[in-house]
Image (tube, rainbow, N blue to C red; front, side):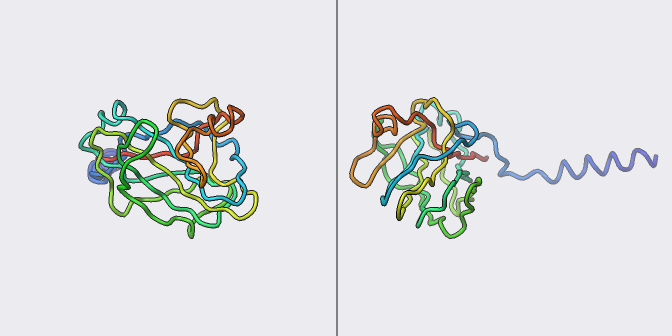
Length: 183
């Protein structure tokens, strides 16, 4: 009986410690952090786009958390979640938050959305808008090769395009930006 009691207690804890907002999936294109592209004095957005054919499986769930790698801390950093727009440009802003005050350099950073974003089976863009003074390597990336929708960029002098296009195919990576979907 004494050996059964700890087992029953453990089962009880697992049964009642589960919450309704458990992570059911992560949305990502990247692998482990490798580095970060260099940008000079600039405002830019690094983004990943999850098209409707990927988000449809999560209809009824919510985007609750975002994780991203910061190599060098930028002057400012804002997390932006966009709705469906066109295949090459995001739509309306669904969520935004200034996250620069809490960033750690050379590490993964996470942000719990104060208002989770409903997954409705449309495109979902997760982006980081950063501002730099001087040459900075802020938003982390993997070693590549880039996959479709893993390397979107909006530079202060250009519209949305892939980083591959912006760099004339010299930079071939995926941003270290990940979303977490919960029930």
